[in-house]
Image (cartoon, rainbow, N blue to C red):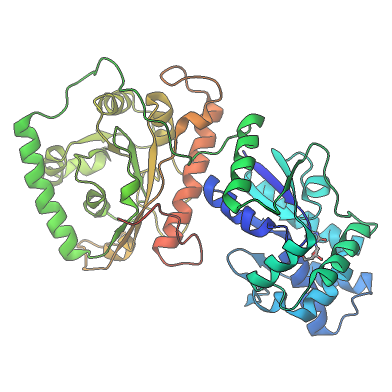
Length: 459
Ligand code: DC
């Protein structure tokens, strides 16, 4: 679990840094300023006096506020409206009321509790909302630089250094949870630093704190594992595989046209390819991710069909019992990885329906930790439409395959090397991290509001 609290004045770069950091760590981000802005906007629209604490608190309690890629109040997209000069003018006053703060702080804590990990930005996150965060950061910058950034970012049209200073003075001077540097916070002056440098400092501090550290930093090349348990494919086996793959991939392109994005990031050595699972044709779609031979762990039931079983075997698959720590399958998978080959494991275990990636199985994380190989999350956008559960034949459908950055399991094993006992907490943490990455990728692949750019580079 990694909770990062980022506080600082307006224009200090919090939002940009929080977004970049969250993307780097594969975590969700919460902009708490947007919540205060949402209440201020609702107050303006409903004629509630920004000085009336009770009326504002009642208003806040009754609002449904959703802060994600867009900001919604009672279902309406107010992303632009909350950044208006009118809202800028009253938001500090609205945010100064302890009763309003109590309601929003409660929601912010609930957000963090529900996720366990995330990047939360605001003014009182390290001091009040999440004083036990893994890392607290206080971002600052010269007022002139901040005013410039805000104007350039289009957040506060026309707001100069003077009015920013006024707002800061209000935020810092108020009685309830004023803007302060939290005890133990890492203070960064971003006046002359780029986003990458600020994020780099935060990542370095996080690694030093021993919280679940950042993962998607490029993993150092791994030494090949000693003593392979079984040999790689022979020439004949490989030729047969290539023919089968060519047919499968040809059919896949024909039936399910669409791009594969991000595959340039694939590791060279062994890895676990972890796709989302919404249909029986997923293995056919996933086969397009790499030309290398992909080995599969496929649930036992599928092998009952003789045709599927034969084909799967030819394609390097092995059966796995679902919902059980199938020893044989694990031993087999470890052997494949030791041979330096990639293996496909569907972390959702069985075909799921709908947009949520939830309750994923721990096998992929466990294997990654045991073998010391990265996991590559992949979203197969559109596959559910290609062959929804219950249908007997696939239908031609456009798909979008997003390959995410490789997740290095070493970051989840503080101190210990790979190959030994795998601590449960590491498996849980890596599983949750993988789940979040898959969710973001699937949202992006399906074109839902979310992590566009969640995949690594093009390809
Ligand atoms: O970060 P921002 O400029 O969008 O914040 C809008 C206002 O909300 C700002 O005046 C400070 C206030 N705020 C707060 O009091 N506590 C927070 N955690 C976040 C923002």
